[in-house]
Amino acid sequence: MGILEGKAVAVTGAGRGIGRAVALDLAANGAKVVVNDYGVAVDGTAPTSEVASAVVSEIEAAGGEAVANASCVTTMEGGASIVQSAVDAFGHIDAVVCVAGILRERMLFNMGEEEWDPVIETHLKGTFTVSRAAAPLFREQRSGTLIGFTSGAFAASVAQANYSAAKGGIVSLVRSAAAGLYKYGVTANCVAPVAKSRMAGAVPLDFQMGDPEDVAPLVTYLVSDRARHLTGQIYSINGGEIGVYNQPEVVRTMSKEGRWNPEEIAEQIDLGIGCERLPILDMLDRMAAAAKKKKGGS
Ligand SMILES: NC(=O)c1ccc[n+]([C@@H]2O[C@H](COP(=O)([O-])OP(=O)(O)OC[C@H]3O[C@@H](n4cnc5c(N)ncnc54)[C@H](O)[C@@H]3O)[C@@H](O)[C@H]2O)c1
Image 1 (spheres, rainbow, N blue to C red):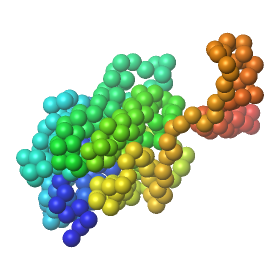
Image 2 (cartoon, rainbow, N blue to C red):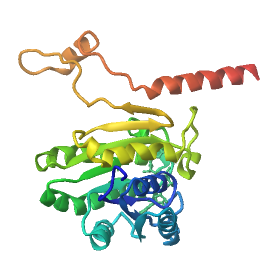
Image 3 (tube, helix red, strand yellow):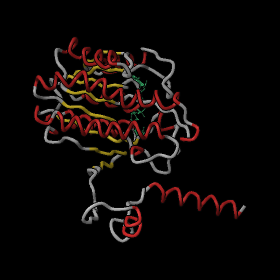
């Protein structure tokens, strides 16, 4: 008996990369799986239904149970059809795992609606459409779990304001789902993965990356009954390293009787609350210094 025996789970973006590894691992642990994938290129274009079907064949060949769904997560109909696929095929749904994503990189000063809208729609709205369809069923059955896929880039990213904003939105959506569904016994958590995939291949990174298969057991655990005490969390994972993010909170305050004026704030802020430096700026300073040194030396 696997730890997910009897569970029905829908995974979006499960045709490739991390989503595929997650779907295979869920099935290997006993879950019945809806393999959703719109089958698009990294930038979201050129859909094909073959990608989802191929993973269903892999699961079946390994002795598991799965159905394919080639809907696009960006529409309400698409989200509803993914959840309905589980209900139709397996009679119920216990978890949704929203992995589907695309990239359209551009500096903010060059970014157009054609980069902004599809990225926000696929990641953020795509997590909403599926969660929205599952939430009433979870509420009714007084159980269920939602897993959103965010990224370390939610904290900041140089040439991905669209992606970073979508991933930050997913964090807030998932935290709000955790709060809103808490009294119904429904949980919601985020995974922030790093793994070698075609999407990661497009991003220059200066650290080692694990494999999509390294991410899958964390998702399997979060779907299992062993994780029912966890909600509103963000877990990072890269290879063998799992981390947990802190919860955002006000870290210092400064007060006076009545209203501040700008001059008083200017005088007091560095002595009082100071600031919390954006960590990525240190990396950018190091890169700029290295580039300057190289230029000076050549
Ligand atoms: N790979 C990494 O290092 C990394 C880092 C941080 C976050 N992530 C996140 O993990 C998730 C998976 O990334 P990956 O690296 O496996 O990417 P990937 O490109 O290999 O897989 C993404 C899958 O999503 C599918 N998809 C795209 N748009 C869709 C839509 N509208 N409807 C349904 N399916 C759609 C694609 O067809 C593709 O199969 C993404 O949300 C990504 O942002 C990945």
